[in-house]
Length: 401
Image (cartoon, rainbow, N blue to C red; front, side, top):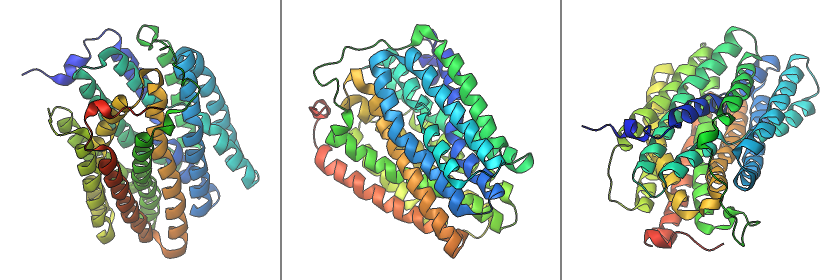
């Protein structure tokens, strides 16, 4: 029986750009957690840690799409190096500020500047789209990269939390900074698979976020992102409350494991169901799987609950990327994917901030109520998308800018 995942790597250079993209993407799962773990140790409060982490996530959510617009216009090789350099310098400033007890405003300043971190998720998927556009293999490629994302979210938290707790507070963010620097250099070096610059049409200066359908997807993913942000902060606080702070990495890794297993299977399926309906069902599952979080009593039950919650993550991302590829003009694909991931970033920012506030005032378990509320909001947004765009045939998904 043919292995669909093996088949997509028949394209020359695909292994190299996917592997180097993996290295450059590791910071995505490390920076927010690294900031929370670092500042909770150096400053002793989860409110500040969550607020600075949320500032980074929100800044990245707003800046990354602008970086991706430049990528679509000028190419990955010209834009990625400068974006990565700014991010590396900003993260270095953030770590030094935490180390030498600089004023709190410096933490927020460097968190904002760190938002120039490029959307490697979008850049990698843009390369796959360039190779397999309008073929069944593109879905498989998107599924594979969603699985890679989950591996990143399994490995990243363990590295970020483990280093900061086991060595020194800045160790997690430092590792993330090194991964970004090294990974970006290696990724840019893969010239043979860099997407061609597609001619911009008369809407070249218009952002694709003006598409109502893309707006609804971004809003839905923002609520899903709040689940991520809440899980990160709450898992750390809950584990500390249980007397085993480092175990938060185990619980969060189980979240990614659930998503990875389901994603592996989902990526091989040949579903005939319309993408909009798949999207609605995946979000509905995500909402339902937040409910077990309300009854966790320890690290073991938290890990099980997060494993179940992770089951809806990969399908949601895979389906979302498929919808966006049909929604967005080819000349603006990187920006379109980035806006979707921006929704996740904004949600993570809000979720981290709200859960941090709730934890400081009402205890670690209160953060799980933010997860349940986020799941409900995601489902409402998904229903709105389906009612407005679900019944339309795929050919009508591309809405005029």
